[in-house]
Length: 457
Image (cartoon, rainbow, N blue to C red; front, side, top):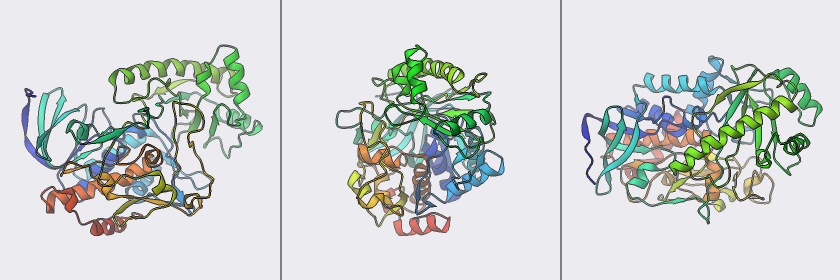
């Protein structure tokens, strides 16, 4: 296929396709490692899921009470706390953050490191020379342009570069179905003191109005289920509005609650289908109106609440997954497998938000496998970031090589940070020392460098 594109005269050592959770950190890491870096982002800010999909707070990933994701994740949290956009609760959970503050912090980290970012720009397709990507054809207000680099990091979250290069990938479960999508939102104008008191009195103990967390899932024993059932009977909610509901406080935004819902209807689950994505946005907005009416009607402290933010990006948990040099499996997770080329540790549970309904390994935290010990963890190998059929591409984040079940455990933001950091350093080294060959990177040296920078590998 011939496209009428022009070639950008500049070249970069590392180009990152997607400035989201993994991509922004990968860009920072590569720039700090001395590479000339360009991060290409479809929206107007970095951070992806954590900012534009408003997925806050970070999910805890601990073993023996200690955070497993360190390095740039620690710095990110420290910078957020310094500006009042991050916080730790009394239980030592330091994962509370304000998505709007995260946008600023990530951008500053990238620019301070000498990296560049090109916003409002979409990846069209890679320009291939055998198994090497020579350039990416991009589209923005300047039209179609080919941007060249020595190494490419596919951090689109959907493995767009890999898929369009014709390299192998997998998607969905055994039936081709993906995890449920969500469209997150906030309610502002909440009297969090009154809401906190109500939750404490109704079976959901809270430590402080500043760190609220409440939930409801049909059939899971939530003390709020009778309120949801009454609202369905009254026609305020639809039955599916109670499939999955969570509310969280947001640092730096007093009187505002972030909701991890609504869950999008089951037939809209493929985040790579533009028609489904568009329909998910409208389906989610209608559900947000219903949930807002429920909160005003049924939750004390929310009588005068109003919609503060509707996330500009649908929350997508899983789409394409590359077929890499190694594919992480559920058995690897349950057996706490270690790898010589490990670049990340994880103890977040298998967490499948199934569109099929019923028990689907959702947040299982008990069992006899080694993984269920409180000080257990498994590792993610560098090879899971290396796609088959491409020589100068790395894929950190939720599209790394894993089975459907395993992906549900490694997809959370802090793991994406750590995979992104490893990919950024490796890409910079591959561009500088290995002719762009990502398989030629000295993995022992990479692990030593991550440890030197505060990493936990």
